[in-house]
Length: 107
Length: 241
Image (cartoon, rainbow over all chains, first blue to last red; front, top):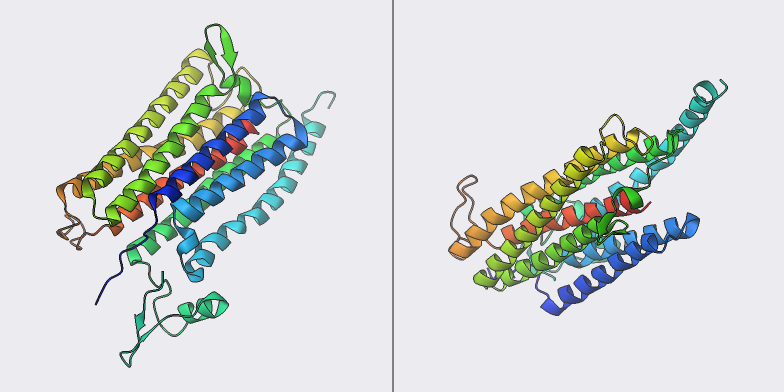
């Protein structure tokens, strides 16, 4: 049986993604260097993070060329972590409020 | 890439795409991941479990940072380095990021040359990847030494602010650095196999006794890109936040 060899793509694809990742990393470093604060800072950091993560998974790890069955099996479960993040923000909030009440100044 | 699957009747058929493809792939007592060697599928599943481990580390970091009443140390100044009397914020971490991204680039090309059966280029690129990885770990060791010896950061306290900073930092970057170190080790082992032409001759592995082929390079690549991927998240939420 003729066996098609795994993932075959031109080298130029990897070089372009490499360049893009460099640029995106430079951008996220610039966010810190130019002291952008507050919501713009967090928004930009998360944006560049997701773009970089997406490029690495899709191109370097070849996920873009895999069948949907594998994509969903691997990429959907980590999304559930967001539920955990949501829960832990509440947990952290009331912990901080309790600390403020019981250990803060004047308590 | 569509690879024809052989049915019971011996006819070749191409599996359906889209949602029908998902249903077809997962049903009727077949292997779920078509066109993917099982070693690669297993590496993906290992990486999924590793994703959860790192998620939980980053989550616990988020929780302690949100719940502390002490001010959180500013990573931008904690990780600053002085060059010629001028302090550049976070510069070491930025260099480490660029090094790790470069190592991912060379690894992706090593996988590509492997499948083209250009074993010398593949092995050399993997060794370059390993070298970048070793540089990364070395810089991390430098960073840890500076923080522990010069700044007095400990898992239970530090001079900058919230005590949880130290424990989060050592836990997260330590576990990541451990992943990089193991990756470097396996890169050297795989590069040696590629160099000797083990995968051209389908030489059996000393441990698994399975016939070797260039899928091993791609599986190694998956692990290495994952290490880079985790660093993307650590860089964003720990160092930049």
